[in-house]
Image (tube, rainbow, N blue to C red; front, top):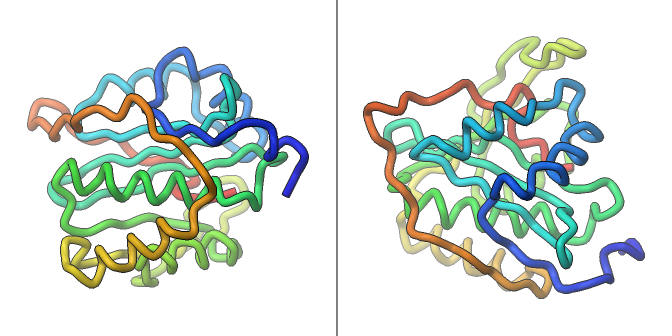
Length: 201
């Protein structure tokens, strides 16, 4: 665990515009093709979205986002400050996203991850995601393949038990400002997801 990870209780909260400087600073470090401020602002305005940040004090140490397409919850992005990795923050963010996806009406979840990112794939398997296919040369920066993963039957008792087991392994944290999810509206079509979807760093 890094020295930074011991400074303050982890807080999970809905992403707000005031968090974007911290989000963009992490984005620039972990993604070869980072999202712009405008793209994040657009996403925050759309229905059928769930974006959360992890903070220690006022410092953003991670964030994650999800969008709904029909009853599929698509994990769009997961990122953690490189100084805070291996402290359970990615797991906490993904766990929170699953709860938010369920509130938005998801019946199954999906994401894409670099074929070489074994650590992220192991985390997703903990949350019930399983490989379902490959998108060849998906990542524009190096033409790496993306592994497509799905979690089905996320409303079953067995999945609820899996979610609870993962929750029991999370670091100490506080959830704040959690609001009722806004359902997807037909007037708000879905955007393309992050060019490096679901890369838990």
